[in-house]
Length: 283
Image (tube, rainbow, N blue to C red):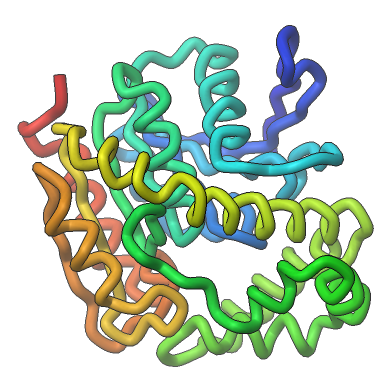
């Protein structure tokens, strides 16, 4: 897995790990809270036939650096911009899953000339009334989150992940737990997870109106892909997002939970590939 160490500026020394396949226009795939770039392992090879597909471990997750401090959405946006510049890329298509959708939205508002298209897969977007579950509210509480994080074990992570799928696949559960647990259980990983949860929760509360106004002004093409059985981000959420955006299309999946790119990988790959090569592009 390649890594890139950022040099200069406020993010000097931050190391970002990523997977890259293909060539051409860059497509950056962003995972959700507690995830890592390999949640896109079924998608990168297919999208790499049409573009330069890059799956990134966001700062604080996977094999990327986990610096102490807050992790608000604008921090992730700045890290993506520094990553883009370091690789010498021009305009990006962003594909965000779950919290990765919020990160993609934050980047699109901060750097609109650098965004070609936006795809939101089981995504949550600030400004549209999303409320985190009571479990995450407890984890966000100071002290309780630290205690719960210290008690994390593979069986509990597997249970939490299974709830995200309409029909859990044993092989997928095994991979996600095996690949994700060591990072989630490490002191640095626990701290980054809780800091991200608390920072992003504050962003959703404090900056909701700014995101609502800003996203409504964007003319770039947006594709929303969502599972009808998503229990993490209810289907009402992408409906609200699509109704507010100027150039959005929603595609629904039956028998699908919170991980469309895994549960219905072939269909999602086809939709994303079609979206990448369609004529309507933002300028």
